[in-house]
Amino acid sequence: MGSFETNISSVTSFTLTGFPEMEGLEHWLAALLLLLYAVSILGNSLILFIIKEEQSLHQPMYYFLSLLSVNDLGVSFSTLPTILATLCFHAPETAFDACLIQMFFIHFFSWTESGILLAMSFDRYVAICNPLHYSTVLTDTRVAHTGISIIIRSFCMVFPLPFLLKRLPFCKDNILTHSYCLHPDLIRLPCGDTTINSMYGLFIVVSAFGVDSVLILLSYVLILHSVLAIASQEERLKTLNTCVSHMCAVLIFYVPMVSVSMAHRFGKHAPEYVHKFMSLVYLFVPPMLNPIIYSIKTKEIRKRLHKILKSKH
Image (cartoon, rainbow, N blue to C red; front, top):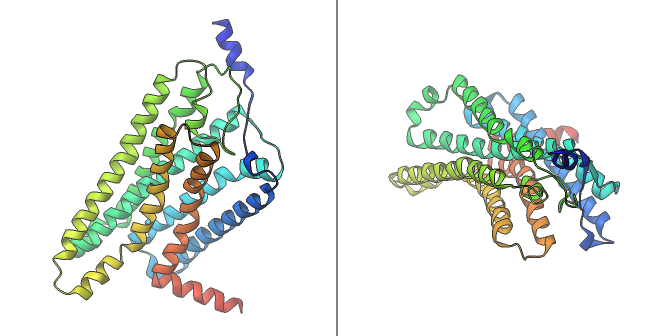
Protein backbone atom coordinates (compact mmCIF):
# COMPACT_ATOMS: atom_id res chain seq x y z
CA MET A 1 0.00 0.00 0.00
CA GLY A 2 2.93 2.31 0.81
CA SER A 3 4.53 1.77 -2.62
CA PHE A 4 1.15 2.42 -4.29
CA GLU A 5 0.96 5.84 -2.61
CA THR A 6 4.60 6.57 -3.49
CA ASN A 7 3.88 5.78 -7.13
CA ILE A 8 0.96 8.19 -7.21
CA SER A 9 2.73 11.01 -5.37
CA SER A 10 5.92 10.66 -7.48
CA VAL A 11 4.06 11.59 -10.66
CA THR A 12 4.04 15.37 -10.81
CA SER A 13 4.15 15.97 -14.55
CA PHE A 14 3.87 14.53 -18.05
CA THR A 15 6.11 15.22 -21.03
CA LEU A 16 4.20 16.15 -24.16
CA THR A 17 5.65 15.27 -27.54
CA GLY A 18 5.68 17.58 -30.53
CA PHE A 19 6.71 16.28 -33.94
CA PRO A 20 10.33 15.07 -33.58
CA GLU A 21 9.88 13.39 -36.99
CA MET A 22 9.61 16.88 -38.50
CA GLU A 23 12.79 18.27 -37.01
CA GLY A 24 13.69 21.51 -38.75
CA LEU A 25 10.11 22.02 -39.91
CA GLU A 26 8.57 22.54 -36.47
CA HIS A 27 8.38 26.33 -36.95
CA TRP A 28 6.36 25.85 -40.14
CA LEU A 29 4.05 23.40 -38.37
CA ALA A 30 3.61 25.83 -35.47
CA ALA A 31 2.80 28.62 -37.95
CA LEU A 32 0.25 26.39 -39.73
CA LEU A 33 -1.44 25.39 -36.45
CA LEU A 34 -1.56 29.02 -35.27
CA LEU A 35 -3.18 29.97 -38.60
CA LEU A 36 -5.80 27.22 -38.08
CA TYR A 37 -6.42 28.52 -34.54
CA ALA A 38 -6.84 32.07 -35.87
CA VAL A 39 -9.32 30.93 -38.56
CA SER A 40 -11.27 28.86 -36.01
CA ILE A 41 -11.42 31.56 -33.30
CA LEU A 42 -12.19 34.40 -35.72
CA GLY A 43 -14.73 32.34 -37.71
CA ASN A 44 -16.68 31.09 -34.69
CA SER A 45 -16.60 34.52 -33.01
CA LEU A 46 -18.00 36.08 -36.20
CA ILE A 47 -20.80 33.48 -36.38
CA LEU A 48 -21.77 34.30 -32.77
CA PHE A 49 -21.66 38.05 -33.43
CA ILE A 50 -23.77 37.77 -36.62
CA ILE A 51 -26.42 35.54 -34.98
CA LYS A 52 -26.63 37.94 -32.02
CA GLU A 53 -26.99 41.02 -34.25
CA GLU A 54 -29.18 39.60 -37.04
CA GLN A 55 -32.81 39.45 -35.85
CA SER A 56 -33.83 37.06 -38.68
CA LEU A 57 -31.39 34.46 -37.28
CA HIS A 58 -33.10 34.27 -33.88
CA GLN A 59 -34.48 30.80 -34.66
CA PRO A 60 -33.85 27.31 -33.17
CA MET A 61 -31.51 26.25 -36.00
CA TYR A 62 -29.22 29.23 -35.37
CA TYR A 63 -29.40 28.91 -31.59
CA PHE A 64 -27.97 25.40 -32.02
CA LEU A 65 -25.38 26.83 -34.43
CA SER A 66 -24.41 29.38 -31.72
CA LEU A 67 -23.96 26.52 -29.27
CA LEU A 68 -21.81 24.69 -31.85
CA SER A 69 -19.64 27.80 -32.31
CA VAL A 70 -19.18 28.24 -28.54
CA ASN A 71 -18.25 24.55 -28.32
CA ASP A 72 -15.75 24.86 -31.20
CA LEU A 73 -14.14 27.83 -29.43
CA GLY A 74 -13.90 25.62 -26.34
CA VAL A 75 -12.11 22.90 -28.35
CA SER A 76 -9.63 25.46 -29.71
CA PHE A 77 -8.89 27.08 -26.34
CA SER A 78 -8.54 23.74 -24.53
CA THR A 79 -5.67 22.58 -26.78
CA LEU A 80 -4.03 25.99 -27.43
CA PRO A 81 -1.91 26.32 -24.20
CA THR A 82 0.01 23.05 -24.56
CA ILE A 83 0.34 23.30 -28.38
CA LEU A 84 1.93 26.76 -27.93
CA ALA A 85 4.13 25.55 -25.06
CA THR A 86 5.34 22.45 -26.92
CA LEU A 87 5.84 23.76 -30.46
CA CYS A 88 6.57 27.47 -29.96
CA PHE A 89 8.29 27.69 -26.57
CA HIS A 90 9.81 24.17 -26.39
CA ALA A 91 8.35 23.66 -22.91
CA PRO A 92 6.84 20.14 -23.14
CA GLU A 93 6.37 19.57 -19.39
CA THR A 94 2.80 19.81 -18.08
CA ALA A 95 1.67 19.28 -14.49
CA PHE A 96 -0.20 16.06 -13.67
CA ASP A 97 -3.41 17.81 -12.58
CA ALA A 98 -3.23 20.33 -15.43
CA CYS A 99 -3.00 17.43 -17.88
CA LEU A 100 -6.08 15.75 -16.37
CA ILE A 101 -8.01 19.05 -16.52
CA GLN A 102 -7.07 19.51 -20.19
CA MET A 103 -8.09 15.92 -20.94
CA PHE A 104 -11.46 16.54 -19.25
CA PHE A 105 -12.18 19.65 -21.34
CA ILE A 106 -11.06 18.16 -24.67
CA HIS A 107 -13.33 15.13 -24.21
CA PHE A 108 -16.14 17.22 -22.69
CA PHE A 109 -16.26 19.43 -25.79
CA SER A 110 -16.12 16.37 -28.09
CA TRP A 111 -19.11 14.77 -26.35
CA THR A 112 -20.95 18.09 -26.37
CA GLU A 113 -20.36 18.52 -30.12
CA SER A 114 -21.91 15.11 -30.78
CA GLY A 115 -25.00 16.08 -28.75
CA ILE A 116 -25.33 19.44 -30.55
CA LEU A 117 -25.14 17.73 -33.97
CA LEU A 118 -27.92 15.35 -32.85
CA ALA A 119 -30.08 18.31 -31.72
CA MET A 120 -29.45 20.02 -35.08
CA SER A 121 -30.52 16.87 -36.96
CA PHE A 122 -33.76 16.83 -34.92
CA ASP A 123 -34.27 20.49 -35.85
CA ARG A 124 -33.90 19.60 -39.56
CA TYR A 125 -36.24 16.60 -39.14
CA VAL A 126 -39.02 18.74 -37.58
CA ALA A 127 -38.52 21.58 -40.11
CA ILE A 128 -38.86 19.19 -43.11
CA CYS A 129 -41.17 16.42 -41.87
CA ASN A 130 -43.48 18.51 -39.62
CA PRO A 131 -43.10 22.13 -40.79
CA LEU A 132 -46.52 23.19 -39.46
CA HIS A 133 -45.57 22.15 -35.91
CA TYR A 134 -42.01 23.55 -36.05
CA SER A 135 -42.67 26.66 -33.95
CA THR A 136 -44.70 24.73 -31.34
CA VAL A 137 -42.24 21.80 -31.05
CA LEU A 138 -39.01 23.83 -30.99
CA THR A 139 -39.88 26.71 -28.69
CA ASP A 140 -37.11 28.88 -27.17
CA THR A 141 -37.64 27.14 -23.81
CA ARG A 142 -37.26 23.66 -25.34
CA VAL A 143 -34.13 24.75 -27.24
CA ALA A 144 -32.64 26.09 -23.96
CA HIS A 145 -33.54 22.85 -22.11
CA THR A 146 -32.01 20.78 -24.94
CA GLY A 147 -28.77 22.78 -24.75
CA ILE A 148 -28.58 22.40 -20.96
CA SER A 149 -29.31 18.64 -21.22
CA ILE A 150 -26.48 18.19 -23.76
CA ILE A 151 -24.02 19.98 -21.45
CA ILE A 152 -25.14 18.01 -18.36
CA ARG A 153 -24.90 14.68 -20.25
CA SER A 154 -21.36 15.47 -21.46
CA PHE A 155 -20.24 16.60 -18.00
CA CYS A 156 -21.63 13.48 -16.28
CA MET A 157 -20.00 11.16 -18.82
CA VAL A 158 -16.53 12.75 -18.79
CA PHE A 159 -16.35 13.75 -15.10
CA PRO A 160 -15.28 10.27 -13.80
CA LEU A 161 -12.34 9.96 -16.27
CA PRO A 162 -9.76 12.08 -14.35
CA PHE A 163 -10.63 10.34 -11.06
CA LEU A 164 -10.42 6.87 -12.60
CA LEU A 165 -6.93 7.75 -13.87
CA LYS A 166 -5.81 9.42 -10.63
CA ARG A 167 -6.45 6.28 -8.57
CA LEU A 168 -3.89 4.32 -10.68
CA PRO A 169 -0.14 4.01 -10.02
CA PHE A 170 2.01 5.68 -12.72
CA CYS A 171 5.44 4.11 -12.74
CA LYS A 172 6.43 4.15 -16.43
CA ASP A 173 8.01 7.02 -18.36
CA ASN A 174 5.32 9.69 -18.37
CA ILE A 175 5.81 10.62 -22.02
CA LEU A 176 2.66 11.32 -24.05
CA THR A 177 2.58 10.97 -27.84
CA HIS A 178 0.68 14.21 -28.50
CA SER A 179 1.06 17.92 -27.72
CA TYR A 180 -2.05 17.71 -25.51
CA CYS A 181 -3.58 15.23 -23.06
CA LEU A 182 -6.04 12.62 -24.38
CA HIS A 183 -7.58 9.71 -22.47
CA PRO A 184 -6.42 6.96 -24.93
CA ASP A 185 -2.88 8.34 -24.60
CA LEU A 186 -2.93 8.62 -20.79
CA ILE A 187 -4.45 5.17 -20.27
CA ARG A 188 -1.29 3.52 -21.70
CA LEU A 189 0.94 4.85 -18.91
CA PRO A 190 -0.33 3.38 -15.59
CA CYS A 191 1.20 0.11 -14.45
CA GLY A 192 -1.96 -0.84 -12.50
CA ASP A 193 -5.04 -2.60 -13.84
CA THR A 194 -6.78 -0.28 -16.35
CA THR A 195 -9.71 -2.63 -17.11
CA ILE A 196 -12.29 -0.37 -15.40
CA ASN A 197 -10.93 2.67 -17.29
CA SER A 198 -11.07 0.84 -20.63
CA MET A 199 -14.56 -0.54 -20.01
CA TYR A 200 -15.89 2.84 -18.88
CA GLY A 201 -14.24 4.57 -21.85
CA LEU A 202 -15.86 2.09 -24.26
CA PHE A 203 -19.23 2.46 -22.51
CA ILE A 204 -19.33 6.26 -22.85
CA VAL A 205 -18.12 6.13 -26.48
CA VAL A 206 -20.90 3.68 -27.42
CA SER A 207 -23.62 5.37 -25.32
CA ALA A 208 -22.82 8.86 -26.65
CA PHE A 209 -21.18 8.74 -30.08
CA GLY A 210 -22.76 5.38 -31.00
CA VAL A 211 -26.32 6.34 -30.02
CA ASP A 212 -26.00 9.90 -31.40
CA SER A 213 -24.71 8.74 -34.80
CA VAL A 214 -27.50 6.13 -35.13
CA LEU A 215 -30.17 8.73 -34.26
CA ILE A 216 -28.65 11.26 -36.71
CA LEU A 217 -28.69 8.58 -39.43
CA LEU A 218 -32.32 7.71 -38.56
CA SER A 219 -33.35 11.39 -38.77
CA TYR A 220 -31.83 11.62 -42.27
CA VAL A 221 -33.57 8.43 -43.39
CA LEU A 222 -36.89 10.00 -42.31
CA ILE A 223 -35.94 13.33 -43.94
CA LEU A 224 -35.06 11.56 -47.21
CA HIS A 225 -38.34 9.62 -47.11
CA SER A 226 -40.24 12.90 -46.65
CA VAL A 227 -38.25 14.70 -49.39
CA LEU A 228 -38.83 11.90 -51.94
CA ALA A 229 -42.58 12.35 -51.42
CA ILE A 230 -42.32 15.92 -52.81
CA ALA A 231 -43.50 15.95 -56.44
CA SER A 232 -41.32 18.78 -57.79
CA GLN A 233 -37.63 17.99 -58.26
CA GLU A 234 -36.76 21.66 -57.77
CA GLU A 235 -38.55 21.67 -54.39
CA ARG A 236 -36.82 18.41 -53.43
CA LEU A 237 -33.38 19.93 -54.09
CA LYS A 238 -34.32 23.16 -52.32
CA THR A 239 -35.43 21.22 -49.24
CA LEU A 240 -32.31 19.02 -49.19
CA ASN A 241 -30.14 22.11 -49.60
CA THR A 242 -31.24 23.26 -46.12
CA CYS A 243 -29.51 20.15 -44.71
CA VAL A 244 -26.19 20.41 -46.58
CA SER A 245 -24.39 22.50 -43.91
CA HIS A 246 -25.45 20.12 -41.15
CA MET A 247 -24.51 17.01 -43.18
CA CYS A 248 -21.04 18.50 -43.78
CA ALA A 249 -20.67 19.31 -40.05
CA VAL A 250 -21.64 15.71 -39.16
CA LEU A 251 -19.14 14.24 -41.66
CA ILE A 252 -16.20 16.46 -40.64
CA PHE A 253 -16.82 15.55 -36.99
CA TYR A 254 -17.56 11.80 -37.19
CA VAL A 255 -15.18 10.72 -40.00
CA PRO A 256 -11.97 11.94 -38.24
CA MET A 257 -13.29 10.70 -34.87
CA VAL A 258 -13.97 7.18 -36.21
CA SER A 259 -10.57 7.22 -37.99
CA VAL A 260 -8.73 8.14 -34.76
CA SER A 261 -10.62 5.44 -32.85
CA MET A 262 -9.86 2.78 -35.51
CA ALA A 263 -6.20 3.81 -35.61
CA HIS A 264 -5.91 3.43 -31.80
CA ARG A 265 -7.57 0.01 -31.86
CA PHE A 266 -6.25 -1.57 -35.06
CA GLY A 267 -3.33 0.58 -36.22
CA LYS A 268 -1.00 -0.02 -33.29
CA HIS A 269 1.88 -0.81 -35.66
CA ALA A 270 1.35 2.31 -37.77
CA PRO A 271 4.06 5.02 -37.44
CA GLU A 272 3.51 7.37 -34.52
CA TYR A 273 3.21 10.44 -36.75
CA VAL A 274 0.10 8.87 -38.40
CA HIS A 275 -1.71 8.81 -35.03
CA LYS A 276 -0.58 12.38 -34.32
CA PHE A 277 -1.72 13.66 -37.70
CA MET A 278 -5.14 11.99 -37.42
CA SER A 279 -5.61 13.37 -33.92
CA LEU A 280 -4.75 16.88 -35.17
CA VAL A 281 -7.32 16.53 -37.98
CA TYR A 282 -9.96 15.42 -35.45
CA LEU A 283 -9.35 18.38 -33.11
CA PHE A 284 -8.51 21.13 -35.63
CA VAL A 285 -10.63 20.53 -38.74
CA PRO A 286 -14.24 20.71 -37.35
CA PRO A 287 -13.75 24.02 -35.40
CA MET A 288 -12.08 25.56 -38.46
CA LEU A 289 -14.47 24.30 -41.17
CA ASN A 290 -17.84 24.64 -39.38
CA PRO A 291 -17.96 28.47 -39.53
CA ILE A 292 -16.71 28.43 -43.15
CA ILE A 293 -19.39 25.92 -44.24
CA TYR A 294 -22.22 27.78 -42.47
CA SER A 295 -20.99 31.14 -43.82
CA ILE A 296 -21.02 29.83 -47.41
CA LYS A 297 -24.33 27.96 -47.18
CA THR A 298 -26.42 30.41 -45.08
CA LYS A 299 -27.64 33.42 -47.06
CA GLU A 300 -28.31 35.64 -44.02
CA ILE A 301 -24.84 34.99 -42.55
CA ARG A 302 -23.25 35.54 -45.97
CA LYS A 303 -25.10 38.86 -46.41
CA ARG A 304 -24.07 40.12 -42.96
CA LEU A 305 -20.43 39.09 -43.56
CA HIS A 306 -20.48 40.95 -46.87
CA LYS A 307 -21.87 44.04 -45.06
CA ILE A 308 -19.12 43.83 -42.39
CA LEU A 309 -16.39 43.52 -45.05
CA LYS A 310 -17.89 46.42 -47.04
CA SER A 311 -17.94 48.69 -43.98
CA LYS A 312 -14.23 47.97 -43.41
CA HIS A 313 -13.47 49.45 -46.84
